[in-house]
Image 1 (cartoon, rainbow, N blue to C red):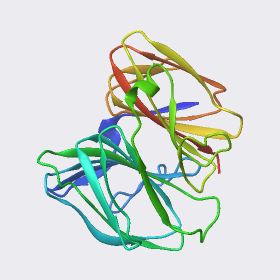
Image 2: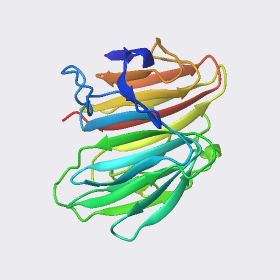
Image 3: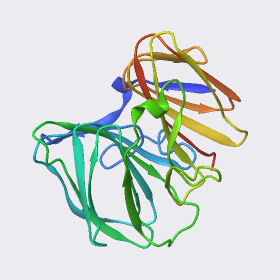
Image 4: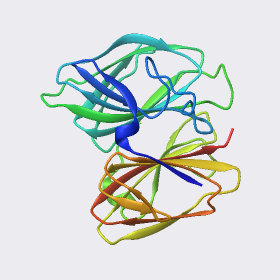
Amino acid sequence: MIDVRPFSSLGGANHGWLNAKHHFSFAGYQDPKRVHWGQLRVWNDDEIAPGMGFDPHPHRDMEIITYVREGAITHRDNLGNTGRTEAGDVQVMSAGTGVVHSEYNLEPVKTTLFQIWIIPDRMGAKPSWGSRSFPKAGREAGFEVLASGRDGDEEALRINANAAVMAATLQPGQKLEQALPEGRVAYLVAARGRVTVNGAELGPRDAAAIRDEATLTIEASEEAELVMVEASDA
């Protein structure tokens, strides 16, 4: 089953400094049909103006992954962590028992990013933060795992959930196949470009909510960048 969710169908709000689109119910956008997809709770498509950002605020018991598409984001938290994550790279914050953090676009240009929240397997874990560079050459015509709590994904940033965040790039006409094990769901977003997923068409920033598909066959009709979460169908 593949449920295509066009970018135009997303909720959200434009706050001036922040133009946010929400794939799932979040803040003032509430849709009982779009609350979560398995363990995946939030997928926000954010555009942040230069010199602006999120002032210090708390989180707990959530795995928060930031995939930067353009520009960069600068993180600071009450655990003493600071870092700048550039386009194509990823940061992970395991909120656990609690963390207070800020996220600012200190660049002279707009920053765009995906903010992804995954429900952890256990509550009350020790909070942590990490960031890593992932050269895009590693994801050409195949998914590279960026953040994961699955066994066997030791090269990825670790999260406290049996889930994985991955990315791939495809040239026009390229095709890839990705298995989706039984009991797992996937949520795929075309960050840019156009693709088909088992025949279903996705345009730029469209999403596909996927379950009960043993194999995903993805083909690009133009140069494409894909981001996908695979998680437990909890």
